[in-house]
Length: 468
Ligand SMILES: [Zn+2]
Image 1: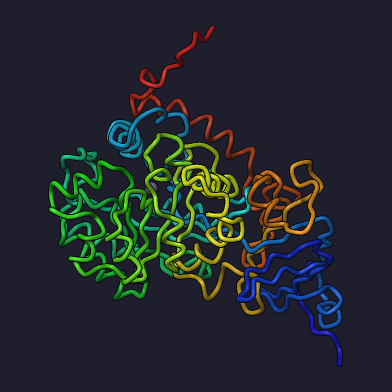
Image 2 (image 1 turned 45 degrees about the horizontal axis):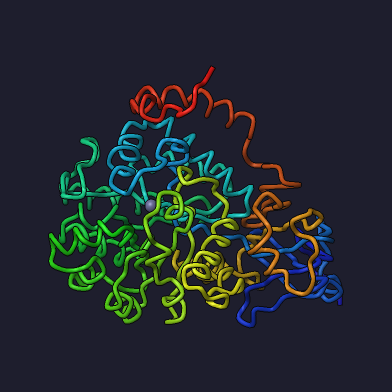
């Protein structure tokens, strides 16, 4: 019997971490790809005996993994790097990030998203969940051009002023407007760009949203067979304000509203009570930890958080880099922080093994994105979203018996060599293929002055040391 033809054959991979149901790790592995789908994955001699291919990549000295999923990153915040340091949660949002985002026009939003896709791709992320903004067409355009996957969402609030703070004028909508616009975004973008773009319903946080808005968005998400996401229990203040205003914690409020379920994705979840953990388990809610976000401004999400317990209880918890204002957008660094953070605060070396941590960036992320039938593992029939790391670098040496150790503890996204999404090579030899990096940097440099002038944040973020 003759060989079948694949479009792409990756062979002689030193290690393939498949994340399949058995969590197989294949030595001298190969992957055959046709179109946007994995045809076969096994030992090189086996796959080579079955398939010939037009294009072959030899992956010696490479560790191959499923494309990682960043489960919470605001693409519109990519130009906020340096604008929101050393501030607590209220100042961070209401005096820095919201004024910044509130000033953004289409051009700023587009280039922010382009920079975000570039940084994500170069660090081995093939899919991200955007918690939402107000210029979705710009976000979607950047994602479509980049070749990667994304969940877009329109942000929404319908309470302009709460005890937590006041939101920018431009964002204030009635409940009806917010619902109508959220549905329009889902109708326009869900399943677009050859299926690479999906859309969720989203509300920005609980304290600035009415019961009607939250229930209405959940109804829209259910009707369109998609998900709904929000920020939840991200700081002590958000929890205390919920107790003050609604007489219950945030997850308790969602339960009372009847919206908890497997298509609900809760970001941060740093200040949950034991009762909230049990509600999340009962309703099979998915969650996202945002490690560098809490490390950057000290929200207490690791010190007070219960991510190890949520995982132990069988819940799906992903990881999100949240935004560029808390540093590099690099999932491997997020994984290192979340794993080590809990070991340190719990004084327990076994609490977050690298295998469990890596599941957060792959299978758990895919589940939270409601995309686990297609992505998150390397298996025949799944989408060909594949990342290869070059291990011929000091931080990968030596590599003894377990590549997960090197991956989670010592590697960074800078050692990403090749990134493939839906069968298309988007990063080769560490360089972006689908995005013109030089043009991106020139545009970002051009926009920096414009954004400082518009937001008025220039004098506030002035250097502490003399600039001569
Ligand atoms: Zn967020």
